[in-house]
Image 1 (cartoon, rainbow, N blue to C red):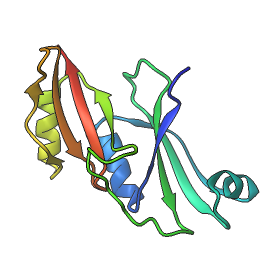
Image 2: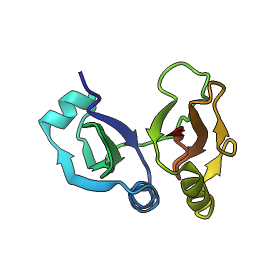
Image 3: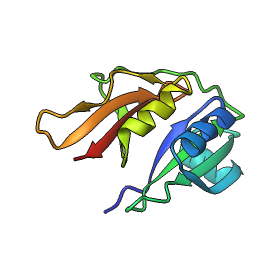
Image 4: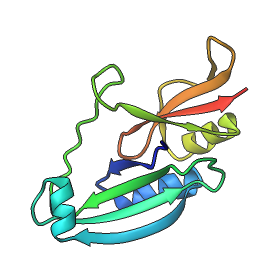
Length: 143
């Protein structure tokens, strides 16, 4: 079994594409407008109109992607959970140069919970940041 994608509902699609593509290096693999019976059925909503953008990092070693969803037909009220709340609270990306990424993101007004730190087992350097929509992302460099 493989992780296919992580879906992230966003209010500002352009700003989110900038974050994931321009700042983190993802590439858009597919972008489309979805509407009709299929999307209504699988989402449990009616009269859906949503732009979906599937992205993959060129250095990825797995099939997994990030999918941005920008609903034009329904409210996308944010309900950002704290990391200790039940449910999905964050996702993690393995990176190759966490200090350079940390600097680049800071220069683009990205909020971090802390500076990159060596994990207790000395196996990784880790930090958490939030994208422009407030989603929590763990950045991990294996050492």
